[in-house]
Length: 89
Image (cartoon, rainbow, N blue to C red; front, side):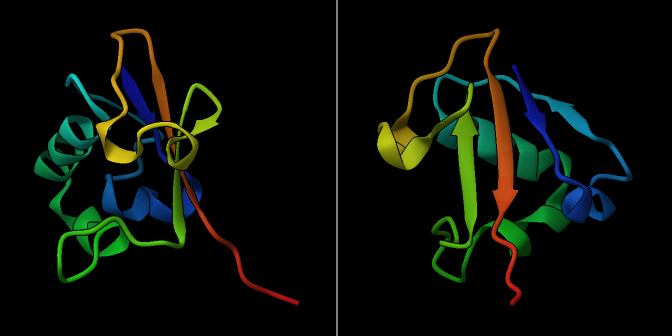
């Protein structure tokens, strides 16, 4: 499976737009992503290690908040997309 990294977060992945990971759940995959790219931690997690509310995580175009959150099960062919909220007016 792979994470699709948005442009705004690529500075933390050395410019990579995709990062291959393994894991049974979104939580496993996120932990591995942070292991590979520790600079992402502050953009994805708060001080209590909870996923920040302004970053949405999608598995195959479905928001994990509509599924089982970080406990959402994954298959090897899944694509996980990080979508940070954009503020403006």
